[in-house]
Image (cartoon, rainbow, N blue to C red; front, side):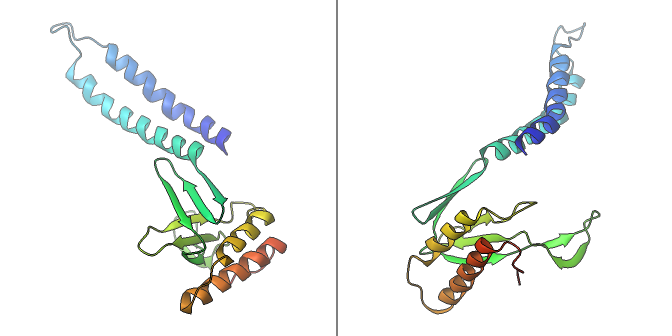
Amino acid sequence: MKIGATLLAAPFVGIPLFAISKLEGAVEPSTGGPPLGSQILMVPFVVVLVVFLIVLLGIFRFRAQVEGGVVEVHGAFTTRRVDLARARVWLDSFPECSRVRDLTGRRLPHLYLYAQEPGGRKVLLRLRAARAFLPPHELAALADAIESDHRTGQDAEQASRTVDLLRRLSTDPATKVS
């Protein structure tokens, strides 16, 4: 993934850098300074360069880890932490889109674990990549972390369903997600 992203982004970073260097070196003969038109032309190249650098940073920095029941999800510029034992947890999937962005009505089995502590921000953890779920020991660790504290009411029911599904997925990835 990271190698492919780097190879794909190389022209989108290299071409703007080359264009900026050429435009920056341009000199207007009458004033001896850079022409105004070349400075305006640099703006789209700089925007493309910045966008792709941020995307690459997000790809290379993204990771998630569980330590002692606390999930840490690192993004391009943020790190979010949530204690799974205390947080409200639930699973969700996203609707499938066709190539033209029309919703097909089916739900994709790209599961996401959401966790939110009272008064905290929602943390999103992708449980399934394009080809497979997380390894079974990681799914079991998530289930253990969620189960490690006593919950009451509706949160307890939701957590129980989440733990059951995580355990089923850790033993049989072909489990149908409903």
